Every structure is written in C-alpha cells, then in structure tokens.
Length: 251
Image 1: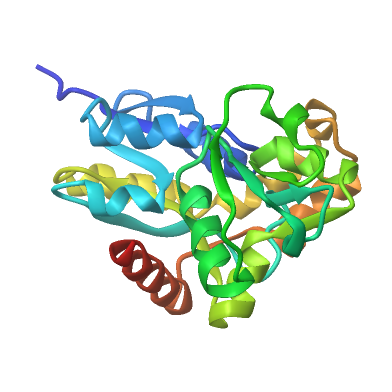
Image 2 (image 1 turned 120 degrees about the horizontal axis):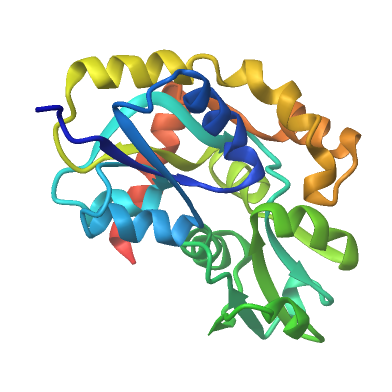
C-alpha cells in the first residue's frame, strides 16, 4: 500500500509563484498534494493539522506543538518588500485608525510592533473584511499585503513599507513566511522537496512572463523579484526571526 501523500499549503501570492512552479516541475505528484491559500488559511491548516507542511506566516511557529523549519528557503526582504504596506492618506502622526488585513497574520503583528517601538503611535486597530481598502480614508489607514498591495500603493500619498521600517528599527532583514512542518516528515520526501526548492530562482523569468495576470508591468515584476524579495533563509534572517518571535512573546 502506497504511503499517504504529504499535504502542503502554499501562499498563493506572486512572491511564492516561483516556489510553486519549482515544486510542480519536480514531478512529486505521487508524494505531495499542494493547495494554494491566502496566508491566514495556510496558517490555520497547519495549526489544525489539515496539512503536514506549509509555506506559512512565521507567527504560526509559536502556535504549533511541533514546529519544524524544514528548509533553508523562505519569503523575506532586506529593506523594502514592496508588498506589505501601511497605506494612508495621512502621515503617521495623524493616523487614528488602522485596518488589519484579514489575509495576514505576520504583518498584523509586525505593524503593531512598529507602531509601539518605531513609529510611537497608538492607533485603534480595526478588523478588516474583503473590500476594506475602500475604507482607507482620512485618518484611517490600512495594512495591505500581497499582490493587492503592489497595485494599491499607487493610489495613496503615504506608503509605509513594513519590512523597510523593521530594517530601520533592528538593522535586520525580515522573514514573512518559511517552510514549516507540524510533524516528522519522511527524510527522502524532505530531500526531494528541498532539491526542488533549490531551483526556485530559475522560475522567476517564467513568473515575470505572466505579468499581465497581476495587473502589473513586466518591469514592475522584474524589479519586485530583483530588488525586494529574497528567498534564502540565512543566518541574519534567522536572527531576525528569533527577534520577531521574542517581540511576539512579549505582547
């Protein structure tokens, strides 16, 4: 009898598309089953044991009884990320309310840390529902992430990049998501997964060629991958992740 497939939840954003293409090209269909989800759903699926592995927001890690980072690849930025933003029609000093993106978990916690430790503001935090972007008016700002942020940022006079401000606060890059398992995974399957993920950068040109699907220019997407998104989970990023999780434990 064949072993059950390893279930994997992957964030369905532009920045994770190279990962998805790399996994799909590896011909692992007999061993893995991939679902594409928004970050908050990736997190819920891993917490609820509906999947075995997830490319998940890093805020999930403390919520798992067995959290195992299984790869040296992640979604991160060293400075501006371009797609995790606080959008506003008013400067920071005048903001009274902030909508928190319903698709996110990590950026929700990150914006609260920045508000306290870096921006020194005390806004009212508002839960957001689909379409909340239209409510970003006056002194009410909003956290917007992912592909929507890449498009929406052109519509606001004040754009605060959360990864950039984390770098100003800490001097470190920021890790938004990493590959996490909630149990022991067969070593052979893990080795195949990581071999596939090593090819991630090779698929960026293919993603760029799909630029029309994201309502962005080819140059915008090229710049996003070359200037904003980083994939290697190196020592500095691990240091940053530890610091972020420390801040989370203090809230």
